Image (cartoon, rainbow, N blue to C red; front, side, top):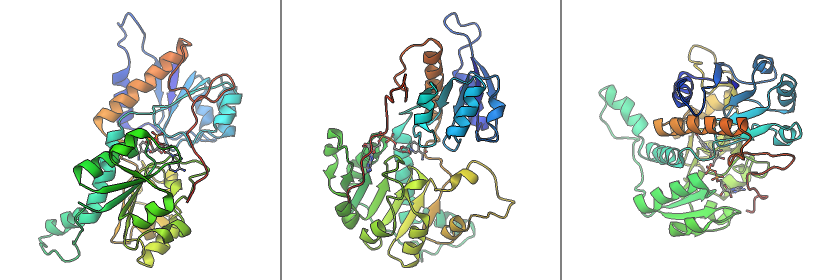
Length: 351
Ligand code: NAI
């Protein structure tokens, strides 16, 4: 199979190449991988010509026009090397008969551990201490944090990542954990209590988002829900940028109602993340404003970025491609013959 890999970074190339079967393997032959360092978009879709399948990541665009362009060039499979698929028009993909598969669970712990790292960096100001000490400044003013033990942590979405995060916060830090999920799962009950979203927001010292981005969850954090949060609470988003209304969080930070914000994802990240813009004038005024707050921490969508996760992403992506090639049922398929098999569970948000 010819696979066109979009948004490729050196580590994608390395791990996908390592996951390929060796050319001497008796069971399967390596695929032909063409690596593109740019994202898939209406402008770049023609560059998939000659490919049987495309491999994409979180900020590649798989809108209806892009899917039609891919289809007319003979592309028949879409392999997401990520869990979220909010960037794919699944209805159109299904109508065109595309095979679409994701990597649903490559290392939930990698993302959960990163969310924990953000909580503690922001809470204990280790990012500021690091810079200060390097300049010979050993003062503690402005570095005061709060002991997490006994505090209340709110988890929005208790799937694989939310569950791993809840486990660390309850069993590791000794926090009381509240969760909101329209599809409650039994496993979470070992770590905390399910409550309505308004109660979670009102009682939590830390709110961490772990639900997918869907029409129901877009801007789940907005002026109204921020107003329901406890004054001085911290918000952490390692899920998808579109969950948070940036304008509203800026207002909540300025009024000091929101006590801290840690983002690994950002709603307009597609134009910036995964690229070096350090020598440019960044035009995104909202992101630039966010970065002026001392109680805001922004990372560039790196929560998944561990050796273990990259290995599993590469191996699972190629297993999905093998299933497509051999016409075997694929457990990670998102569409099949006119039926969407797996759609992200989502209900209108109940506050
Ligand atoms: P999952 O599918 O296992 O869990 C999602 C949970 O959210 C489910 O329990 C679902 O019932 C719940 N949910 C659905 N609608 C909801 C709503 N309106 N309110 C509250 N909960 C709702 O997904 P997983 O693996 O835990 O991943 C969660 C998200 O994390 C992904 O959708 C993805 O966007 C993000 N992610 C971010 C990464 C990063 O590097 N920053 C890496 C991997 C995933």
